[in-house]
Every structure is written in C-alpha cells, then in structure tokens.
Amino acid sequence: MARFQYELSGKRVWVAGHKGMAGSAVVRWLATENCQVLTASRAELDLRRQSAVEAWMAANRPDAVVMAAAVVGGIHANSTRPAEFLYDNLVIETNIIQAAHATRVERLLFLGSSCIYPRLAEQPMHEDALLTGPLEPSNQWYAVAKIAGIKLCQAFRRQYGCDFIAAMPTNLYGAGDNFNLTQGHVAAALIAKIHAAKVKGADTVELWGSGTPKREFLYADDLGGALVFLLKHYSGEDHINVGTGTEITIAELADLIAQIVGYRGRFVFDTSKPDGAPRKVMDTSRLRDLGWEAPTGLEDGFRKTYAWYLEHVHEVRR
View 1 (cartoon, rainbow, N blue to C red):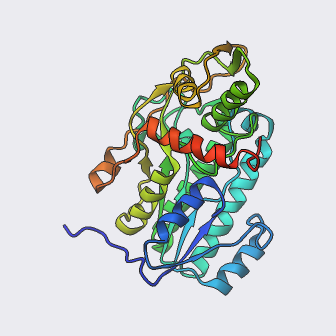
View 2 (view 1 turned 60 degrees about the horizontal axis):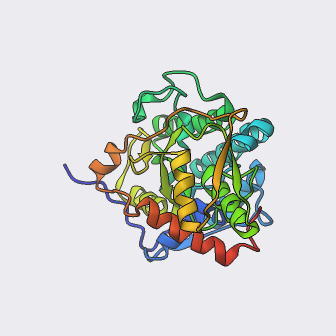
C-alpha cells in the first residue's frame, strides 16, 4: 500500500497561533519545507470573530492550515476561567474549520490535548479511549472544546470530504512557554518557581498537590517536527497521539529541574491543592507505526528550556 504523501513545497501554509509555544515550533520546522508560511497576529485577526476569519481566509487563500491557536493554561487557569476555556476555544476552532471548508483548503491539522481522555482512562492512553469515561473536572472545559474540534474535523471529512486531521499532544515544555506561576502549565511554572527560589536563596519551594501524579512531557520543538510530519504523511479520520510514552512524577520532575537550575533546597507539597488526574501517559504506537518518534530526552529538553528561560527571564510572563 502506497504511503500517503502531501507535498509542502510551494504551498501556502497558515499557522494559526504562530506566536505560541506549539505554533512557533511549527513555523521553525516549516522553514525547511520550501513553503510560504502565513501568519496573522491578534491585532490583525481576532479568531473569535467568524466574519473576520472568513474574510482573512478568502483574501489569503492558504493551501494548508495548522490550528495551534487556543486559550491554554494549567489547573488554576482552567478552574478560574471556565467560560473562556470553553467558549473561546469553541469559536476559534469552529470559525477556522468552517472557513477552511468554504475556501477549499487542501489540508487542515487540528491541535488538541491529552486532557481529552477520561480521568481514569486505562494507561497508557490509546486513541480509542476517547469518550469512554468522565473527564478530569479541573480541565473539563478545555477538554470538551478540544473534543468538539476533533469531531468537527471528522464531521467535515465525512460530509464534505475535507482532508482535515487531528493530533493530540501530551504536556508540552520548551522555548516560548508561559512561565506565569498561576496561569501557566506545570513544567514552565516549576522552572520559574525553582529559579526564583535559587535567586532568593529560599530554603523551601511550595508545590501544588502531593507530587505523586505521573505525567508525560514533550519538548515543543519535537512537537513541531511531529506536526509537520503528520501534515505530510497522514490522512485519516482517527486522531493521532503525539508524545514520548515516558512518564515521570511531578516530584521527580521538580527534582530534575532543581538539579538543572542548581537549587539545593527542599520541596514542600500543599496537599490541599488539586493533583489533577493521577496518571497521564500516551500510547504513541500509531505515530511510531507511521515512522516518527520524539528525538529529545527529558533532561536534554529541560536543559535547553532553562537556557532559553535565562536568556528571556525579563520578557516572559511571570
């Protein structure tokens, strides 16, 4: 059976959310593909406005779209801004997907999240686990929006024959992350918090939860490579997990980051704060069978991320 191949050379590829951690990684990878990358800043295009998205797409006519634009954040952000996480993400994805159909976009790749899976899904989480059980309450708003995006891609494929696909990355870290201590994801927040403790000479660092939940982390540049790979080599209704298949507890991750940062204090866990799902690791066998595996190890990736953070510490959101 011939392998699917989409030629990017000479194409116009719109990366929605090009300034985010995932989107910027995709832009870096597309720079090697001899294609024209299209971008639109928030000032130029409000993705929540359907008429604006339709007009921009009609004027710029991309051949392919990578949907990396989303309202994102950690447990605290999800818990305190549920309407934004549900409404904004729903309208962003519906506006872009509908406009892509209307302007006859050849390929669209929707970027989801591993939080789409049930809180107590069998581990590692296979793509077939979707909608087999209750979601994790702390991020259900984001998860529902992302599930809707997957189903939209499937629906437009079934009804109109649109070549729209979906990829589900695990937890990300890397250059361009949000290092805000309350709004960011766990990896970036840990880097910022542990670095600050080192600078201040603090004896302890307080961390949310018990430290026992197990998580999987993917270096953002690896995600960029995986998404370009899927854009070129995958066409199908089923969404594809993107991860490493390797897990680590939050406490172990904190220890690794402390080693990289050079912090010698100790961690205090606030067990009154939520842990989230007890374990989340992806089954990445479908992606491996297609021919892609993450090349960056955890320690190497976090060393690169911390080096980037040190260079941009006065610019990042804290």
